[in-house]
Every structure is written in structure tokens, then in C-alpha cells.
Image 1 (cartoon, rainbow, N blue to C red):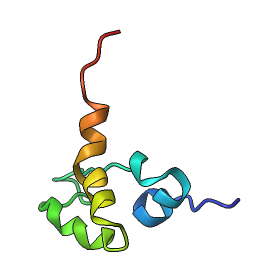
Image 2 (image 1 turned 90 degrees about the vertical axis):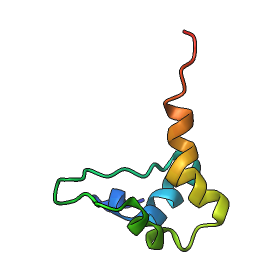
Image 3 (image 1 turned 180 degrees about the vertical axis):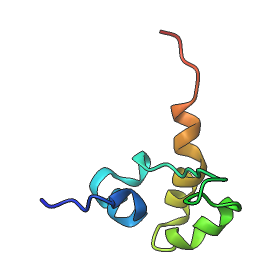
Length: 70
């Protein structure tokens, strides 16, 4: 399977490979590739269900950063 080397730029392609439950929204603002308003990213997710958009924009990172005992 060929994978686009810039696949992190296309959330649809990323989710097709990894699943929406493994995709995170991030912004490098104020760097040139960042977004000053994160909600500007929402149109990139228009092919996803509302539940998957919530995973990508919020829930996945909440799980990732949840403190758990070792």
C-alpha cells in the first residue's frame, strides 16, 4: 500500500489508515503552518460523523493526556 508522505495533512486519509479514534487535531500557531483559530479546521472534517469530529477535535487528546497509575 502506498502512503502519501504528507498524509498528516489530510485527516480523511489518516483516518482511513489509522481510524478516527487515533487522529488528533493540533496547531503549531504562531508558526506558519498553524491556525490562529482552531475552529477553522472544522471544514476539513466535513466527511466525518459528528461523533468522529468530537474524537478528533477533543476526546482523543483527552484520553491520551489522562493521568493513569503506572
